[in-house]
Image (cartoon, rainbow, N blue to C red; front, side):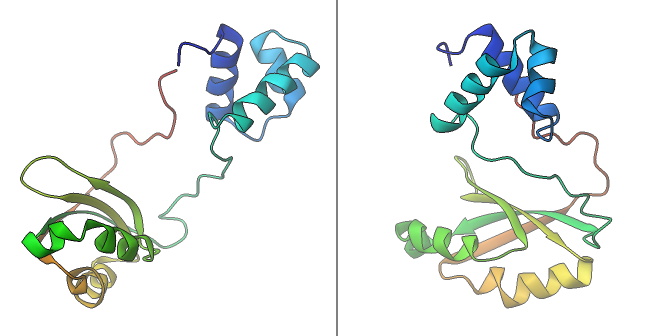
Length: 153
């Protein structure tokens, strides 16, 4: 990330804070005029520093009150076919994130559902049915202390 100048770092911080700002608003906040600011934003998008701009929706307001972290351990056959597991897990809209881990479990999966009953259905009908699953340990989040999408740039 050493090829980012101080203005580009400020632009990225501003976009992480509020991506709905106009170029003129961002330019004012970072100390540039609109044209150079727009060129920098365009470069950041073209070069993949900015993957996409999205709205962050409050999951509870849309009826998704269950927030669960599932640790998944695969059997030997499943570990030999990690791509198959990954392809299947990407199909589930309930899964927000999935990470490959080093250690005693193979994956950490973040899941949202309407409630615990809905998660139970997801677990028995979808997650536990994936090929190669040896064990799943589910941990329910009770409350959120910190949640951010902003990287410390």
